[in-house]
Amino acid sequence: MIPLDASAVHDDTLPWHVTVLDEVGSTSDWLKQNAADLPVGTVVFTESQTAGRGRRDNRWIAPRGKDLMFSLLLKPAAPVEQWPRLTTLAALAICKAIEAELPLHPRIKWPNDIYLHDRKVSGLLAETISTRNGVQIVLGIGLNVNTLDFPPDLPATSLLRDLASPVLSEIDRNPLAHRLLTALHVEFQCLEGGFSIAVAEVRERSWLIGRQIRAIAPQGEVFGRVLDLNEEGHLILEFPDGSRHTLTSADAVRRV
Image 1 (tube, rainbow, N blue to C red):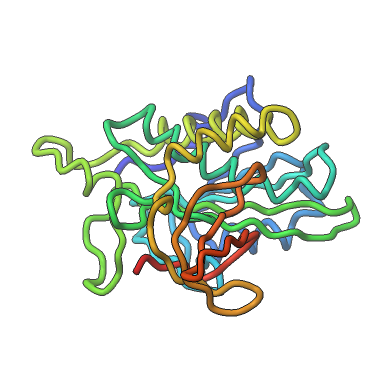
Image 2 (image 1 turned 30 degrees about the vertical axis):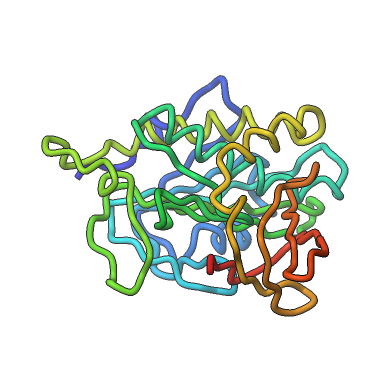
């Protein structure tokens, strides 16, 4: 196992302050608990996460030293109403980092998952917090890198598993982590200007466009065919009666 090395991930040209913890309940919870005393741009990785979670408090399970589990402390200069764009930009950054490092073709399953073929390889969760330093965002990211065995009822995969290489037994997470932080920094520059270009790139990588889905939206369960993304990266859904609706958020998005 090649350990994560903060000095290998850190880059003086990037705004991130990188820390690697041996074990923590959740990198996002750790950041929320310590945010008041940390600089914006703090990034916390961990080798072992005992209480990782995603949307709806779903657990994120990962073996020690196999994958990438990290969270970032952010305070964008953009107006607060534009902050939800960060999820779209982060998903795009994860895809671009994977594409740059490996011969894989990730797709974005709106609103916050990354898929390889029909299995989840990465997820992200953005949470707003208030501290004495004002309103901030904790962005948590999990990326399955080297895990090969998953429960049979879990539609998950990893980068190494999808590579199916006969000679590669482990992906070095350090250059991949550096690539991720670089891509996140680049894409976050589009939070105000250039967001439409980012949405176009997300559209090209969409796992949902053209598919029939069910989802739990604020108004209840919805069913329909995904037509497109709008200018804010929200989902445009066509209902069976031909009417069109825009989903700004949803849970339990499933293909049918």
